[in-house]
Image (tube, rainbow, N blue to C red; front, side, top):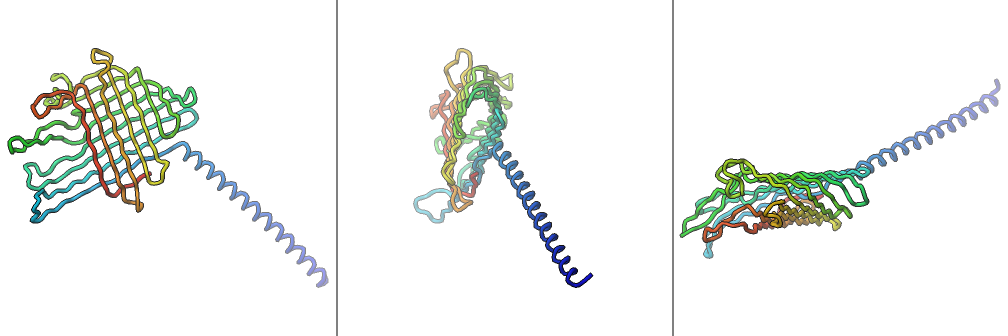
Length: 316
């Protein structure tokens, strides 16, 4: 074979290999691109099915006094909190779960009871619904409310500070189970109405049963009635979030129309990525819960609590 033929064959072979390599590269790039698109599609589908939102963190304050003419007490206060919602949507199925909890303690120097519980709340709810009409769901709901630790009320009478035992784990607690209709016009608001609702009020500590409307020889009191629950979860402004829930219940008996009320709200603003300003409020009214006034007269009364704090937190 001449050198001319050899060179010509080499050129043709190199050209063929270059074309094949280019085709292989193109095929690999297309396959890789297709795989990435498939992964992104699956990820997007998963992300759309599940939605997690909430706020959690720790707020703390401390005051130290030294030769302070205006008076006062050295004190420290800390509260850990979390309000988290998990929403799952697929086709016509919607499942929503919420945990709203907080626990706080305070130290106040120079008092008869220097260590005190400042905050204690455990609210858990879950509901699952089937969309039979646009934005309307046939729904089953369950919820539980209680507190973690022993609670006391502090009063000063004739210059003497007193401590009164008023609550504990499952004393009281409230368990609700119901069936009804849930209206979800958007991702911010929901309203649930149930004409078929049951409530179990529990007080396992015999010394607290009378205070919470439970018979002395029983652990709990059951009621069947009407319930309503409304919820707001607003997070359309960056770093700003509002979470609020309202629950109403009235029994089908002689007390029908006397509503038990639970209204909780948490407003938070996050700045510098880890610092949080939070305002949380709780309003309650229970027809069977008796609270004494300054004259010792016990009756159902509105309960209200507010916490404003700056601390380490995270909104999502």
